[in-house]
Length: 214
Image (tube, rainbow, N blue to C red; front, side, top):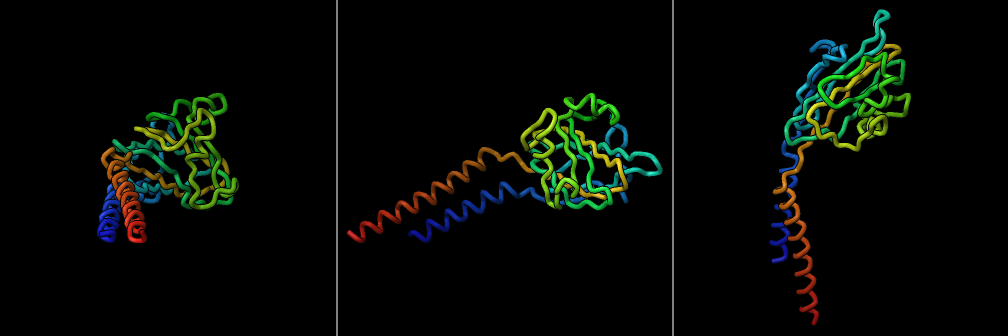
């Protein structure tokens, strides 16, 4: 009886985890080598419709022939999902520090050369890269959220615009936008049932053990 009950609890827990993570996937959603350079216009960023799972961008930024390569990326989150992490996958460049900022909405509201006067209009920003001790795999989202208006992840959407810039030598980088579902109430009920089933099983087993000893 005890083994059978534990098996049921295990099946319920596995099902709950499957429901929570069933939509996970990973894909490169924009690679500048094949998809072209990101927009340098703060009023017209490159749009990306993200999907559940890991959405990677691979790009280069820096000074090209005395011209700063500004990059503006608009992300659209799917309904019922949030941006839970923004991971630095790799960073290659002689200048170890770059810049990233975010605003809510479909575009930035000011040009790059007006950033100082608009610092409080940004949702968040940070410098990133090995120059500020960011190793590959670092989640930049809470670090970005520690500045300007500030926020605590996840970002619930639906639309955000990111500004990425390197004012020194060319830097190659990959950023992974991790999109996760907001758990449905039924999923949490199932998880709760699993926990209760396991708790009840332990109580029954302890009670029967005491009865046998008595």
